[in-house]
Image (cartoon, rainbow, N blue to C red; front, side, top):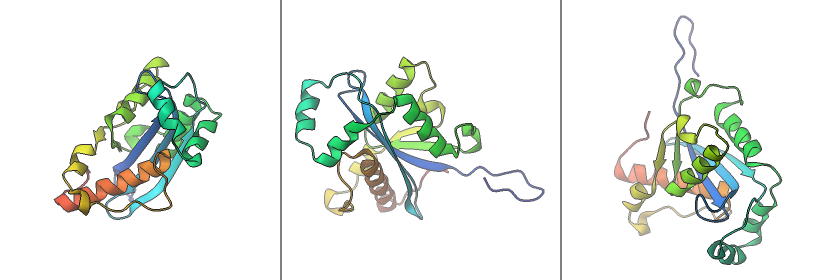
Length: 190
């Protein structure tokens, strides 16, 4: 919030890209990792956050086959010991500065490169009768915008980031979205 003497405070929109890793499709497989990255057009990704959730339930057969082919870094996310709600509260505290902050004081738009990321969170919130992510701000699936950029014109992924590690996927998704917006001559919502 920017405050000037004699003026009302001005809330600045923040942009948060999320990624969820889960044991199967939304409603069937529970999340085991949540990653996020704050970004804007000028600074790119300027803050990253990661939360590991204690695996709950079983993975479906396709997910088990997929997990068995993953690197140790991806599998390390399965070592989470926190409940989804502890991770969720930590995520909201990171987004808003503290767990008691009002979302209206820090308007936020949430992005993901697959609508399923929002569906997993929505399912967990409905299960526990807690407000879903969309009550905190608008949600956008960036996949269609990114698809407008030819594959050979997309940015290279940071070689230190590991695909399917939630925080790395969130940061990579944010950078790919920024690149697509610049390529198309568009901006982020204010």
